[in-house]
Structure formats: C-alpha cells, structure tokens
Image 1: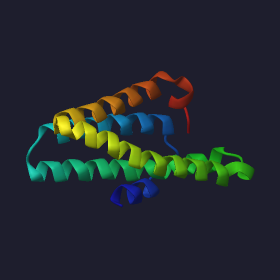
Image 2: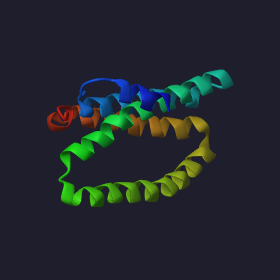
Image 3: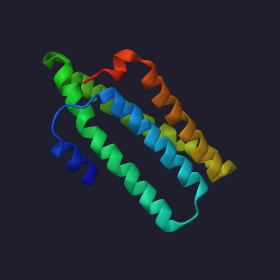
Length: 132
C-alpha cells in the first residue's frame, strides 16, 4: 500500500518500460535473497521492499494502459489481462510446489532467473524502454 501511495504522489510520467525492467530486476534480487537467507527479519524486510516496488510500479502500469489503449477496447484489454493473471496464478503455484520439493534455493533461484531474464528482455527492446 505504501508503494502505491508513493507512486500516486509522484509527479510526472516516468518511463514505464524502465520501471518494469527495474521492478523485474528488484524482484529477481529479492527472490535470490529469499532463497539464501534464513533470518525472519531479513525475509520480512525483503518481502516488504518487494511489495513496495510492486505497488509503486502498479500505479504507472495501469495508468499507461488507460492512456494508451483505445477507449472502445479498454475494458476488454483489462479483462483479458486480469483473466490471464488469475489463470496463471494457480499454474505458477503448481510449478512452484514442484520446485519447492527440490529445495527452496531451486524454487527462488528459478524465479529469480525468470525475473532477471524478463528485465533484460525489457531493456533489450527500445520500444518498451521508451514507453511513457
């Protein structure tokens, strides 16, 4: 919630593509930390920092969609986005459950790897990097 409030209070329009890349990198680092540390305070601090970043970026991601998708299809685009998000969540839990059987390092390492690759892919696309 604090990240959302901070994002809403920020003036201007940052580059959404760079925020997405930064968020993916931040979450990748957080997942790596979660796989390596065994201290409850460190885990709580990491999860709070990750949640702050998700909330902060979410403000700009949603407003980008609302500004750039034509009004006549906006509700359909948002509904498809939400349905895919809700459909992916249970599937990702199944995959994560299978990975967790091999150990938490494998689970968090795999997720960190996917997030790092996502951030690099975003940075590799000029069109995405320059989205405002």
